[in-house]
Length: 163
Image 1 (spheres, helix red, strand yellow):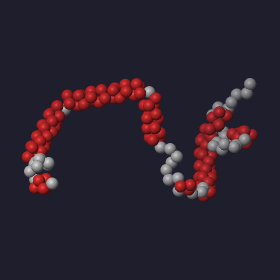
Image 2 (cartoon, helix red, strand yellow):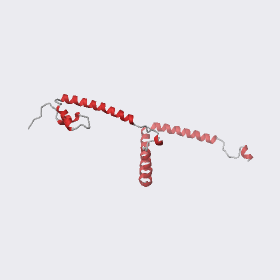
Image 3 (spheres, helix red, strand yellow):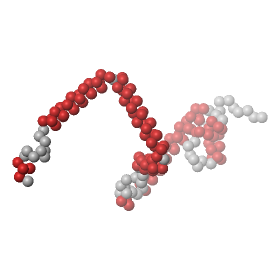
Image 4 (cartoon, one colour):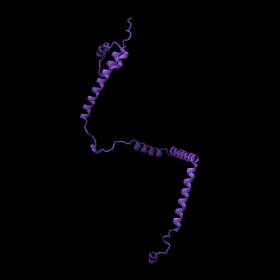
């Protein structure tokens, strides 16, 4: 049985050195035989990677030149679908099909929101006390303004008496 030379990369080690998808195994084997050390393997890998990147950019540039501009073609200004719209349509459809399920989900959501509001109120009590005081004061001012405003249609105006 033949032993592998120490320090020479194995076939499996050299598999990652080439980035050409269409490289034949026969050609790869001949290139693999030239790799004698790990340094050779790293150099070959770097050269092949650079070559693949250079070739790829040229291919992409050629493809970009061939592209036809489709913006506004066929009077299409929006993509064929909007994920949010599709989700909303499916939810509306599901709400019609499964009303009990959605009633429970809505009740759970409402209960969750109420618990969040309760935790906020418990945590920031002074803020909510001040906020309620401001709302009560505003409500009282609006009520006083409504009470002071003359009643329309009470029969006191000259135009209503002329009719």
